[in-house]
Structure formats: C-alpha cells, structure tokens
Amino acid sequence: MKEASVVAWDGPTRVFKWALVFVVVDGWISNKYGGGFPAWHKLNGYTALVLIVFRILWGFVGGSTARFGSFVAMPGKVMAYLADKKKFLGHNPLGGWMVVALLALVLAMATTGLFSGDEDRLIIDGPLAKTVSDATVESAALWHRRIFTAIELFVLVHIAANVIYALTSREPLIRAMITGRKPAEDYADMPAAEPGPWGRALACLAVAAFIVLAPIYIVGGRLL
Amino acid sequence: MKLKIATIVGLAVAFSGVAVAQTDVIAQRKAILKQVGEATKPIAAMMKGEAPFDQAVVQKSLGLIADDAKKLPALFPADSKTGGDTAALPKIWEDKAKFEDLFAKLAAAATAAQGTIKDQASLKANMGSVFGACKSCHDDFRAKKS
Image (cartoon, rainbow over all chains, first blue to last red):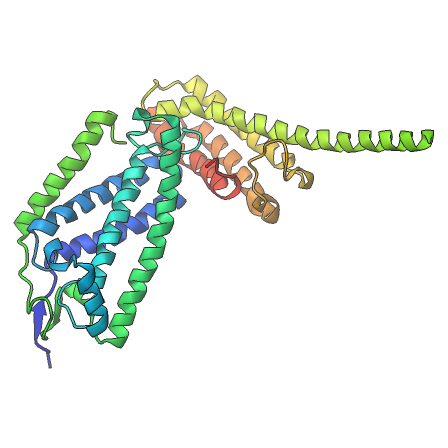
C-alpha cells in the first residue's frame, strides 16, 4: 500500500529547518523565563546566527531543493504560480519568498541582539554592545523587539499556509519536511531532489560557526 | 470676597499638597529603584568577570535589595499613576496582586542568595532568581524608554 515517493528534502535541510524552529521558540522562552540566565539567551542567539549562515552556504552547495537557485523565483514566476497553482517538489515560487523572509528576519533578529542590552545595561548585553554608543544599543534593542513581532507574524502566516496546503491541496508539506519524501508526481521544478551529502553539511556548519563566532570573539572580546 | 480668596488659596494649597504628595511618592520609589540598580551594578560586574568577587559587597548589596523590595509595594498608591516622569505602566494598578508578588519574590530571592553565595561560582549559580525577578517585573510593568 506504500505510494511511490521521491526525495524532496535532504537530511541537513530538514535538521536545519527544525533546529531553526527550536531556536526561535527557545529564544522566546529564554527571554521570557530566563531573565536571570543571560548566557542561555546569548547561546541561543549564536546558535541562530550559525544556523542561518549554514543555511546560506547550504543554499549554494546543498541538496538541489535547498539551493536558492532552485526556489528563489522572479515576480513573474510567482504570478504564474498564483494563476496555475502547479505542484512543486521544493519550495513553490511563493513559499520560496517566505523562506527568504524568515531567514532574513532571524538573521536580523540575532544580529540586532549582538548590539542590544537591557535598559539599565546591567543583566544582559550582547557581546558587541560595548563596541557601540549607548544610543546604538538602545535602537538595536528597539529593533530586536520589533523584529520579533515581525517574526511572530510571518511564522503565523507560514504555519497557516502549510496547514491550508496540507488540508486543501493534499500536498503533505509538513510531513515531507519531517520524512524528506513526497509522493512521486509531475512536479513543476524537478521530479526528485538530489540530496546534499552529510559530510559537506558538516563542513558548512563548521565554516558557519567560524564565520559567526570568530569575529564576535575578536571584536567583542567575549562570547558570554 | 475675602472668604472667596481664602477658599481659593486654601483649595490651591490643598491641591498642591496632594500634587506634592504624589510626586513625592514617585520620587521616593524612583530613588529606591535607582538604589537597587546601583546595588546590582557591582554584582553584575562580578558576574561578567569584570570585577573580582567581593563577598562583603555582595552581602551588602543583596541586603539592600531585599530591604528595598519590601519598601517598594507601598510606594505605588492609586494616586501615583502619572506625573513625576514615572515609567510605571497602568498595568501595575490593573494587576496589583501580581505586581506585589514580584516584589515579594525579589525580596525572598535576594535573602536566599545572601545565605547561599560564598564565592564566584555560587554567585553565578544563585543570582539568576534575583535578576529574573527584576526582569519579569520590568518586562510587564515598566514603560520602555524607546
């Protein structure tokens, strides 16, 4: 009874995706309930930055459906998709932009966090807060809050869209992001994904960790 | 006519008296909160490793924080919602029980920390509940500057 299925998302892309969900949720929890443990929120922020940089690298050298070239679509393609609603194996032209938006928002969120500090500059401050003026710290903190509101809105739309697709167009999008497989069909982008190898993903992760942590440590003098 | 003037003067004095009382209490609580912040500063520096651990300073600061946390709830009477450049949010008076409970938590946490902190390691391990109480109250009940 097993339907024919094809690879849609490689392992690293899926692990990244759910890890990103985790850091967004944990970022909120560590702020709300970890007020006394600044290291928790800061570690979460570094993890978010490393993940995003990893995903940017993976967008060039990762599995075929994870590559930006395969899903970042020109507006004309988005309009065409809205008209014909063809099925895509990877991100559809509209959903691709949601991915770009979410990545950009989390990147901005974590970056503003590096320069933010609490109002009294007592309990928590980002590792780079001391390298900028107080006014910059204040505006970084303001944007850190504003961007979170934006993330909440985009996440809501993102979840709603996926649930609606899963229910109405019988596309098991959420399941595919867990199992990595989708039913074999006549997809508009590609018939099956070519997964990116794990070794390459680990290399990307190591490079991402270095790109993120080394400059912060050198400029800020500390991480926690 | 004289009576009228006397009444007006009397009323004016009475009103300004009330106004003074309100700004007074606001000034008082601002001063105490400022003191709490100042007491926290050296501890925060020790936590970050920017200053050496100093048991005497930690004990004194925590004692001050615990005392201040007990004084503060009385300094938010219903007639002190505005004025005096207060950062108090109206939510304080809408959820007074939670607001006062946070001060009780802060006092308890500071007293408990006083008993357990002996060195840098126990400082790091035990300040969380104090800082957490500061933050949860500021998050919900203090207006943001920007």
